[in-house]
Image 1 (cartoon, rainbow, N blue to C red):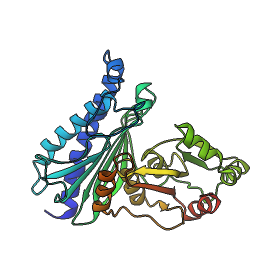
Image 2: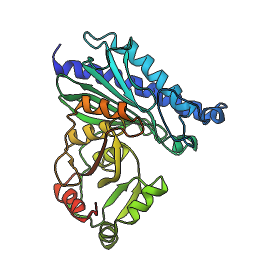
Image 3: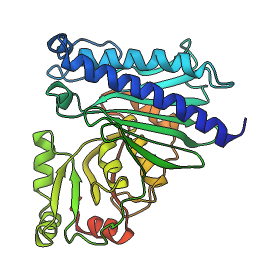
Length: 315
């Protein structure tokens, strides 16, 4: 089985898994169990603030995803064992544990990215990326916008795509028909859900002044959503500089953005890739699960806009 065909099969199964998780989260959080699923639960597999423990809906969605992956990937030759790395579960191989550091296949999962928005039925995403350690690259990535009911995906050898299940429209991810080359009139994605992140954005006076001068706009966003919105043409740039995103949060967007032809830079203006050092990522998590390896970035379709933003950042 060649890489492209295998990637398409992996992507097809991954889409099915993410859609199932999206449907479950959406229906459960609109149902009679919503208040129970919002409750914090102690999770021995992860460490979090005592004020923001794992929520019931996160664990339920993750259990569903892992069970579905085990069932789907068992149909593909060479896909088992695989290792799942997620915020809730940590690092664990399936169908049986113990092969985490030997697995060729690493599945990065965030079952609910944006739990606080899920709780109020305002938004949230399900994120999944399949990485091959031997090939040193992402094979397929899928991201689902739970309440807007949009599915984004891409794989080796195929153009990244989106399906809007509300409007029944389909399109390729290419940054939109008229990508901005400068901050003039640009829509820029920032993560400002926590006060500390809002304050860090507020301190970027040079960048904010340039956005305001050009009559631009600031969008609230989070995780892979930040980059994917640029790839879809819904925003012109995405910026994360405060502390960066963990791999399971950012990898689907990073991969889909690169496949869509975006310019994605680190804060020094150097190009970022989706090639990972799995050993270092696992090591960082094992040393301190509260401090996973994180990635800061600037993303835009046009290189000129990405470099302009980097030049204005105070880091």
